[in-house]
Image (cartoon, rainbow, N blue to C red; front, side, top):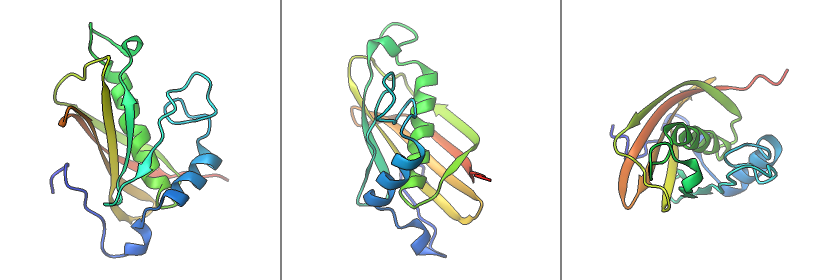
Length: 158
């Protein structure tokens, strides 16, 4: 399975039916102050994830120069945070609140500051509850610059 082709578990299709209403509701309750996507965080990046027709989520991101590492290059830690947040939001879209258990990022090419990029994520497997396999990618000018895979575990709220 290519990282660029979302795949959804078919054993329980109802589990992976992503909706914007579900994403918005869970996000508001659980992530309003998130550094990457929290709209209430005054110092945050305030990304707004939208559910796509294929069930993935995506958000545009302005690669601001203040987030650079090397000249005109978006910091790798910022890229990692973007990918991680996108994967969490993909879970919110199917009604799951989970935290990152493992995260693997593969950097393919530098992202250029001063330009927009898109971060996209989807649920690869939702059939191993309480673990969920997530995938994400950062795209700029139509090219995948970084990709991630992660395992998320349902958050214990007790």
